[in-house]
Image (cartoon, rainbow, N blue to C red; front, side):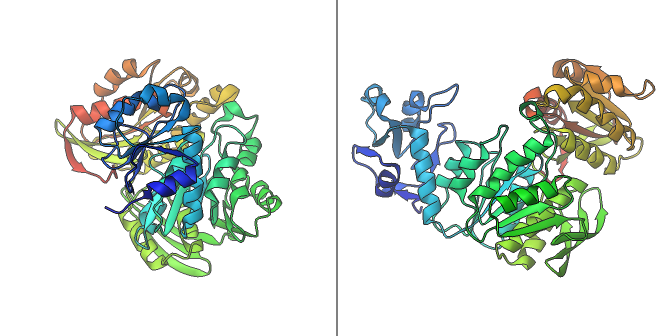
Length: 477
């Protein structure tokens, strides 16, 4: 197996001190002994709750080639017979290694942020660019102060395309991260009500997201959603940041990567887009109107990196929604099957509306119904009651047959629904789940949507354990 880093280059990049006889190099980097593979380096990062140094023995048992540890912790690790690189601070050292990785790389780098669609867009870019070259992208949502440097440090030297998700819930979080990543393309998917508990309004969120322009390499591109209500503000912020090239995607007639025609289906979408002056007909394997907007951004970013667009557009046909982000399961019940749409990973008002519209576009079988199972949207601050209540309008505007609502915040949505509409409300997941299980019948389409912290993924887990999967409907897990 090829080496990710030689030990000598790690010591130099991290300004570390070797202890013991170091191996020639390492095949990967881990911060979690549960997933560590033999031959990898274990970085003993100290987090808010756990300290990686407490797991040094487990890392050795799992086959770590070497440990990266803090000088202050070395005395406690004296009995371990394993090579180490000793540093001042493990996270700071990993950050230095990430910066060195970016310096040695010749890859085209894309940085993705936004209130909604970050991970979906990042995964779609990973999927399509893999047809055009060697891709390295963030795992899961590794988009914070440790996830970004870890992803950078893990990037092989021969990578052709690097895709980095950069998240935030406060101002000044994106700025240091994007300056490490130094992208050729900085992409903002959409500004929407998310993390409003930490900001006064959407304009403040837009300003914080616009920090992603500050790390662009000279001559790089800002890629913006022309349909976003905050487009003009983002455009100005890009100019103020010294961005030389601003490109756009969306339905707007002036968008550089523009949707011309669209046909939505149960399991896919077909569209015609104009990409920098040329028309392309594209089939997307993942359904949903919101996915189409993300795909326009993907097409734009791929085009700006110089990727082979014939390969990119073809690859979109095999794109599948991920677990927690639209993955579909066909599950067996007496008399037939029902469809489960798993949107349980996260939620804010924009993604909640998109998920309800996705459910509305699905086709129940026989006497089946469209059932939305909705949990609290977190981090919305003082606006939470209003933003939850406002979801009633999208439910009533679509052919949704019933809703199951759970969590303290969802009481506001229950109160906003007409008395005649079938809306079950319980304060917790545990109370709501039995009500749902007693309701399911053949032909139903059930969509589960909530913020991650609400525990609504447990409902999905229960359904997948209780009922046999008849036919996998494309979750990319």
